[in-house]
Amino acid sequence: MAELDTSGGGGKGKKTRSKKMSTKVDLTAMVDLAFLLITFFMLTTTLSKPQAMDMFMPDKSEPEAELTVAASRTMTVLLASDNKIVWYMGIAGSTPPTVDNYGKSGIRASFLENNKKAIAFTGNPKKGLMVIIKPTDKSNYKNFVDILDEVKIAGVPSYGIVNDVLPAEINLLKDQGVYK
Amino acid sequence: MPKVKIKRKSTSTDMTAMCDVAFLLLTFFILTATARQPEALAVDTPSSTVKTKVPDADISMLTIGQGKVFFGVVGQDVRAKTLQKMGEQYKISFTPEETKRFALIESFGVPIANLKQYIALDNADRMKLVQPGIPTDSIDNQLNAWILQARYATKELHGNELRFTLKGDSKEEYPTIKKIIAVLQEQKINKFSLITSLEGDN
Image 1 (cartoon, each protein chain N blue to C red):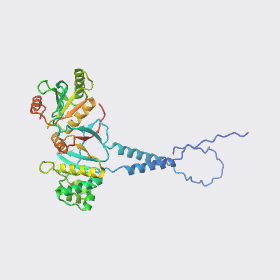
Image 2 (image 1 turned 90 degrees about the vertical axis):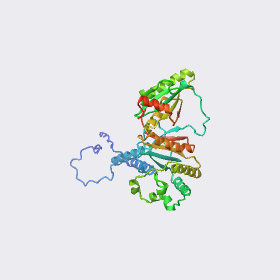
Image 3 (image 1 turned 180 degrees about the vertical axis):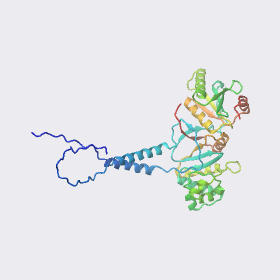
Image 4 (image 1 turned 135 degrees about the vertical axis):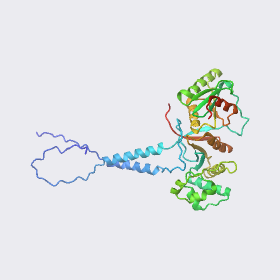
């Protein structure tokens, strides 16, 4: 046991007496165990709760509520197959599309750059980039969550999710070879 | 003059009080921890950097994986009420015993016609059963009915709007998700949450 001998030595030549056993039990190990279990239960109860990412879909019942946003600050992001992204600014076909990847150097850099450009264009820091996310049928759920996450990380001021992909956009993806 | 001997102090401390406190806390944590039920449909959720926790009450979880959708709502009272309302709609009567058993099921994915048999199964058999998922096609959109009745039940019992969360598998094709979102949007639910696991910012 981790206990120092405090009896002070000596005791030579004394009568040997039957030693009385101490009634004290060493509780150190028990406390150790108890705290270990506490830690375990604390962590499992609070950390096992999953995270929830809030998202909004455009209201379908109000088709009149269309926003007029300048084409130069609209960025359409198409989620393609093989974890690829194709994005273009403004109207489809007017600007060349870019194929991008998910992650820090991929789409996030593009978001930040385009947002800067959009702010420079409008001259109003509140009127930044407007991102339209269009997940195609070839993308998976992870892509969808990832792009929403990237939008949040990049601090894009406004974004929307549109579920109908135009035929022209599908052709665009096919041209890039990312619609398999 | 006698030599003054300095008495060495014992290094052992009394652990009794500490032990008491530790076990008290331990008991508290064990009792408050809700035992995690095995999931009916195992999904691997994608990760994201959001750190908002899922709320505890008035929430419904739609689990999506392998092209199937499973429905679940939190709270035994809400579950029982939802089942009763669904029974009225589909002209199936559930006994109080069945309602009680149903209230304990966290998430399920069987058509309402097979629900009675499903409730009658015990826990081990339920896990073995491969559930077909809740029908979502336009002829018989049972998911829509479940969502609607669960919302009514929550409103009646708690006076709150039921919130919806989607728990999808990472590999799930987007069309399945789109279909579920369309069902939710039909009822003008435009705000919902996606359940993700935690990931560091990089």
